[in-house]
Image: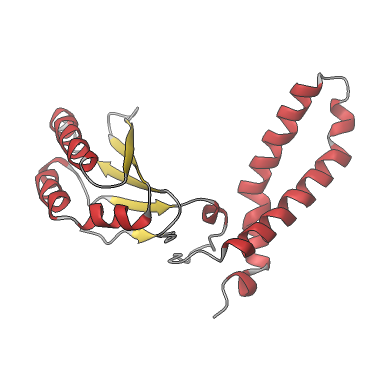
Length: 191
């Protein structure tokens, strides 16, 4: 089994999400669904469990299931991930899947603060993430207000705000924050 790639470790105060993917063998979907029901029930018994959401595959040629598991604290998630109960369920899973599961653990803004081709074990301090995010939001909204808002002047205010905020989030996620993270990498991740 692969070790989970830990993205966030704010153990005491924030909820944490684990995203677990399984590529199910063709024809084993029913068995997987039964396994999924069983492991979800078992996880619910663990301290801090906040629920599971499942994204079922659209592509039946390569049926990949994604389970989004939430716990109230990182330590409680870690207890579940390393428990003997889960290990027993994973042993039952092996005949149903094509390859080992993948696990990604997230706690919040740190998803914006990943460097390309470098696995992140500990996110930057929250104050650094807040400052970098503030700079990204400030510059993005300033540019959009200057360039886009005049073009949208004829639209209702709510629709205009919806478009500007949606574009702001998309730009921050895919363009601005990756570049800011690269630009400030030595400040965010001192050696």
